[in-house]
Image (cartoon, rainbow, N blue to C red; front, top):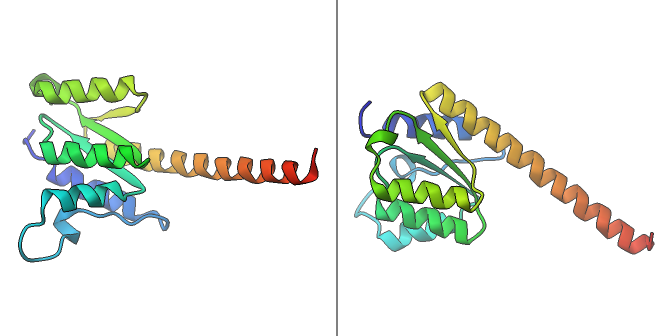
Length: 150
């Protein structure tokens, strides 16, 4: 395995963009040409996301971790996918991060290849959509019950 997740990132973008309700944003595709953007801008953008997909291999850069935490702090749905085979070589920061997120009840999934990653991602997005729809149904029911007094 190579140390990068370039192919996996491209596959995740493709999977996300197949949903008519979603549009992915990735640095490679969407960052404007010109001077590099600041760390604060990247973190700010992540903090306004509805959902954030984090792909992990051996390491986790400080900027990527800050982006994830900004999305988490602002209530974004987060998906953490970890490439199998890299766990033996993960740095301690990644191991600690995964343990903390699992302790905080964030579900993570391991993947062995791109097909498995895409399957996990598609299933996760579908489940989140169903959950959001169910929550809206319950809100409407509760409002109706409150108005009817029953």
